[in-house]
Amino acid sequence: MTVIPRIIEEELRFKFYNADAFCLAYNTGHTQYGDMYKSRPDFYPVYSPSGREVTATCAYRFNHHKSIFIGHADVNGINFFHDNNPTRSDLGDIVLEKSQHEVNETSIHLMTHNGWITKAGVRMVDEERNFTVILGEAAHIIDLTSTLIASDTDLTFGQDNHAFLGVRVADTIDVEDGGTILNANGQRNEEETMRQSADWTDYSGIVAGKTVGVTLMNHPSNPPSAFFTRNYGTFLTNFTLLDKYQLARGERLTQRFRILIHEGDATEAKVGDYYNQFVETPPRW
Image (cartoon, rainbow, N blue to C red; front, side):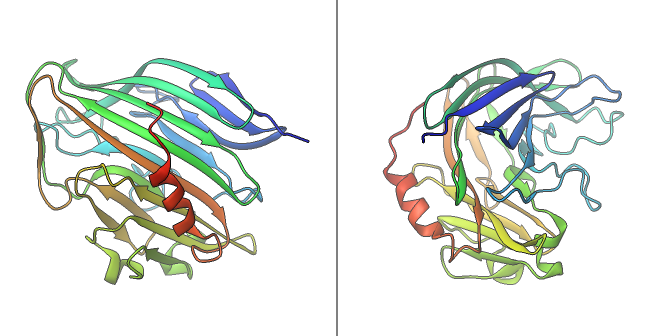
């Protein structure tokens, strides 16, 4: 029997289901300070196919780490990464302005348009962020495409640790609590994987008695990117970790990523096979 995925749009979020099983949510953000304030979209909660929660949000260290998220701390001097101090004029918000979705027999597609806007109301970046969600028994796949557009001015994305696509894993997954970081080069944990370029990097550990994990994959068409990794539970693929990146007015930067939420560790999940499949998948967007 074919299980058709479902998406439900609620206030400020989209919920993704595999039949009746709630698998993950995409939160749209809400830039007015108050009970619902959130300065950028993110995925949370995120469950493995067996129902384990694999990410954390507002972590006890660095509460701007919100599960699975995109941001950058230096776009022409404006910080679109740290969001916990409303008095700072150098911070900006990533605002979801338009969205639409489609569902077929095997996947869910969500198309969004974001404005990267300063606290003073100046639009710095337009972003087309689109993703396909494929929910499975052994792994859930999120294929995400982000296109950054220099609509109004030349842009410099400064060299900075705090960018671009990041994950904060659940506490019991982090290396400090027995988990493992492993990349496609065979390097392990922060000591070996920090600032290393790799096709993918995985973070796996035990949640509720079962090993689960999250993998970030870079498409070969992306600009050179390295991974920022920490044993306390965060990792990011970052196209400006080693050098700045400039976009002239009118130019676009498109990056493709695969996020894998899987059962088992990276070896048991055959993460390399999922990466090869990703590389061979033609772009939808």
